[in-house]
Image (cartoon, rainbow, N blue to C red; front, side, top):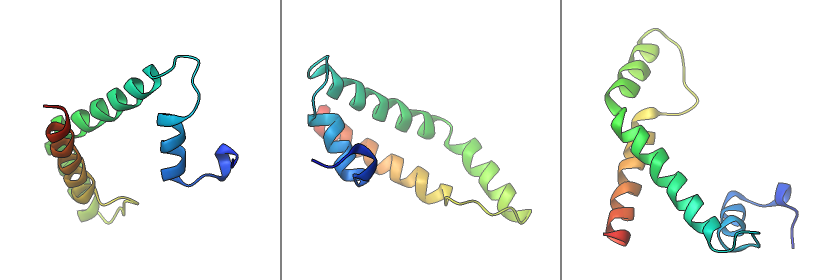
Length: 86
């Protein structure tokens, strides 16, 4: 087994979901809840996030992340979560 700091992101997520936890399967629930809450936060604040992103872009301040794509990804993942859990 690889050390955690040597894992790819996908391997690390798999380890979080399927690896040993003192709390058993509750670890999966925590990970999924955090994913959902993070996605919800981005979607709920979409307008302000994009407004700030576009203002910064207009002022020549580059962002490491394209927030339009980021928010779009959140919306896509939210739809997939809804398909799975509703």
